[in-house]
Each structure stands twice: as C-alpha cells, then as structure tokens.
Image (cartoon, rainbow, N blue to C red; front, top):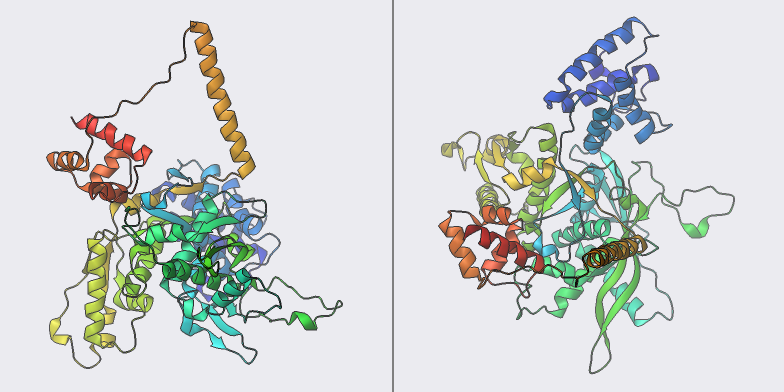
Length: 565
C-alpha cells in the first residue's frame, strides 16, 4: 500500500484504517523513547494483517483504532486529513489512552488550574491548543478578511496556513427593536462598531474570557460574570497602584470589543455552508439552524450612570458564555491545553501589534514542539513574516529591522530566552533587488523558549470545575469537619481550643527581600520560584506597586526570608 498516494479527503476503507492511523500516529510517538517497542510491535502486527486478514490485532492496536473510530468520530467515515487533525488536536489524550494499555510510565506531571482571585499574580493563562480554536481567535484580528455582501452581511473564510478553508464567519447587521431600553441602545451602538473593533486587543479578550469561563463559577445557564476591570488589571502593569486611574473610555472600549465577539457568527463545518433567511423557512423544510453560531452569547448587562445627571454612560460588566461551537474546545477533557504568557496583555495593540501576534504564535508552537520534542527546530523567516503580517508600505530594510527589534524586545521581556539566525547573514546581499524574497526570507531563526514555559507545556493541564452549589457544599463540609475535629480534640484534652498563629518575620520590606536576593546571587525569577510565587508578583512587590498585600504571597515572602536568615 502506497500511503502517500491516498488522497487527503478520500474516505478510508475499514480494512485500511489501522495502516493509515499508524502512519499518522507514529511520528508523534517516535519522539518519545517509551513507545519504541510499542511501535515495533504494531509494525509487526500490520504485516501480519496483510498476510492474514483474519489476524486478531493486540489490545493496544485495537485501543489505538477505537480512539479514532469510537471516541472521536463515532459512526463517521474517516479520511487522512481527519486523522491527522485529530492527532494534532488531541495528542495528550491519545498518549494517555495508549499509556493505559501499554507497559509505559505516565509521561507528564498533571497541573490542576484553579480560579485565582487576582490574575495579575499569575504568569500564564491557559487555552485550547486545538487548531480550529486558534484559527477562530486569530480571525478576530483580521478586519480586512471580511467582505460585505449585498445583504449587508460581512463574510470571511477561515483558512489554515496551507490555505485550506476550515470554516466561515459572518458579521451580521444588528436588528433594531422599538422601545429599547438604555442598556439595549448602548449595546446596539457597541455592536454596530464590530468591524472597527477587530484587532489584537479583541484577541486578548477572546483568550481571557475563554480562560475565565473555564475556571470561574457559572450560573445555571452557564454564564460567568465578566467585569472590564479583569482585563484592565492585566493590561496595565501599574493597575494595582493606589493612585492608578482608569479613564472611562478604556473601560468602555473593552465592552465594545466584547460586543464584537458576540456579533461574529461562525461555522466550522467546511466550505459547503448555506446561509438561511429564517423568515423564509416553512415548517416542511428541514434546515439545520446550528450551521452558524455566535462566538459568544451575552446575558444581562450592568450599566454605569452619571451621578449628577442620571444619564446612561456605558456598560462596565456583563454576563457572557461561549457558544457551543466554542465551548466544545474549552469544556472537553480530550482537548490539549497550553500556556499563554500574560505579558501579551501588556503590549499595546497600537504600537506592539507584532509582539502580540508573535507571542501567541510562539506559545502555541512551543506547546506542540514540547510534545514532539522538537524545540530546537528553527523557524523560517518567511513564516514569522506571514504571522506578523507587516504593513505593505514597509520596505525590506524596515521589515528586517522591525522583526529583529520585536525579537529583541521579547527577549528583554523574558517571553523568549534567546534568538539568533541559524547561519550568519551575508550583509553584501542585503538591499539588492529581491533580496528579501530570494535570500533573507529563506533564512531560519532559532528561537529558544524560557525554561518556565517549557516546564508549563510539559505538564498536562486539568481544570478544577465546580458548580456554585457544589462549591458551597464543599466549603461548608470542610468548615464543619474542621470545627468538629477541633471540638473533639478540645473535649478530649479538656482545654481551650487554640488555633495556631503564623508568626511573621519582623520588618519585612521590599528592601530586605532585594538585599537577600542580591546576597545569595539569585535572579528575581529564581527567587520567585524558591518562594513559590509568580515572577511578576515578586517584581511588583520589589517595585512597591502592590495596591494591597496578598496574604498568601506575604506568607511565602516571610517563610523565604526566615529560611535565608
């Protein structure tokens, strides 16, 4: 059987499935030495199947095939492209499935992500590594992709890097109802600015809201409460200072972008999409109303009013949830999740657009390369140019200077550890006719990720999810159990209950912590790791940028200082 001769979209016959699945899975497993014997065993079995059609495959090979035919695509015909996409999107689940039936040790540490009171204390948030999810997120930055139709709808194709259409998106004109409230009128005005709101800041909010929806408590309808301050505290490094002031237009510009996210309708079912006018549908016609779905759905809105005049000023918080087409990638245990450096939020979407785009791209590919153990593989300059998409007005010298400047900035900000061209640039060729297309764009750049992000990507991410009712019950049960245990001990010893108090280190100051860090020759990142707190949290503490003390971090600081004295 010539594997390469089989078309990507041809339906595979049942008897050929094990061979196709093996060819797609083998490159992933070959990077992990634990599966060497497993792969050799499967190769032998496949030759046995060819020689004897009645041969019964091993349990591990059957499990591998069932992962695709039953877990991912039950009762569906499969193609090479479907299997390849599944291997790419569900790598962690695939490996876990094989680990259960093969004699190998589990590979990765599991990190349980919980909701944090202050996201700014974290280094990363987490998002789906599914390629379709990534394409939808990137779409909200691409205003130029949307083309207006005769019906006033703006349409865009969702394409992968190979130009394959994976879905379609629409921005639909908002309907106007008579007798709308102030909230509805303001929300409508935000929706009407959807196209002008598609930028890198909107992509940040896409990531943030998706993450918050995963980790936050939801109401019975699946909505979370989203406040504009949650985004602003990530965007501005000095947002925790007492004298920090947020202009109203910053707050409302966030909601304008959230409105844009709720105004984009998406279908990820390929190129054969039919847009239906609901008013023309009769009862006899069987149409699929779920072909297009909103990216996000909005619940209640909270309005800000002028204290003096009582006039409505704008929306500052709301209820929001991803639609099923998006929540599928966020609420599915078989999905692979990766880390996104929170510094991406602090880059300006006006002046640091390139930094934002490249940070997202690298974080995504570092996760994939961590799984495949190919972190040292260089990036082609042309690939980086395609990702960043510099303005057409830039000449070759400007593009090179800007790309190298962006990489330098990201190295200074610890988003990348280091970067360099794999071969030195021949400066004599720079500036000549077509030097970008025929020379520079074909060069390769090695971009080394920080050790922290490698460790994050090596972990399997699991989210702690509780409904509000279950969460409250767990809290009440825990409190009751602790109280009962203390009372029982007190009764047994016939003495007063004494709760242990943590004795703080005296005169704990940022200056003292900085002095100890210098004394022991530590970097701030290394010291933060020893303390068990985020690098950004320690940095804010040393710069005295914290508006109020975080009790958990304060205790970690005191414990660390005590251990060093």
